[in-house]
Image 1 (cartoon, one colour):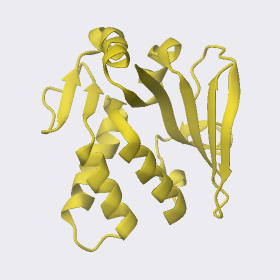
Image 2 (cartoon, rainbow, N blue to C red; image 1 turned 30 degrees about the vertical axis):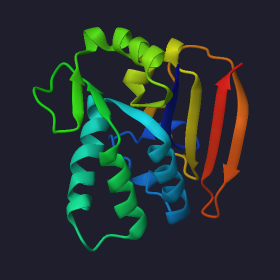
Image 3 (cartoon, one colour; image 1 turned 180 degrees about the vertical axis):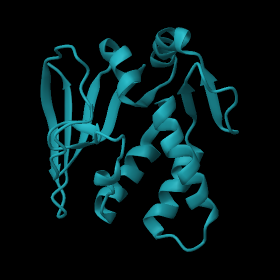
Length: 183
């Protein structure tokens, strides 16, 4: 049985994007990036909403094609493209090799099936997708950056969820990893 983990980079006040849709506040230091590499390598599958998929796929394909990138970025590109990816979208018509497209109407049923059939961690990313699946999420994983945005797209769905802290880790950069499971 799989475990659904909703994982995103967030500001201290809980936003995954600033008011203009930017994520520049969450560029990780190498130690935070290495933790993300390890998390991605441990994932059985990556589940994306369309917007997050587009923010990840194109830029990481460009980085993977370059020779003059840092070791930690090259490693992330390698593990990212080695991990099966599913994007949930009604607007995308095609996806690159290694990615499976699932229509939104089938999203909940598909994630339930994956949770039953795929052992390991199923990483879900994208606030809208995660909000539609909040009842299926087993763990909420936040990588909190030391910045207050004052608005933008919130990480948490607009529904109450009782949580229990299972891990916290501070990085020298001031970024903090928080892991919560359902209470």
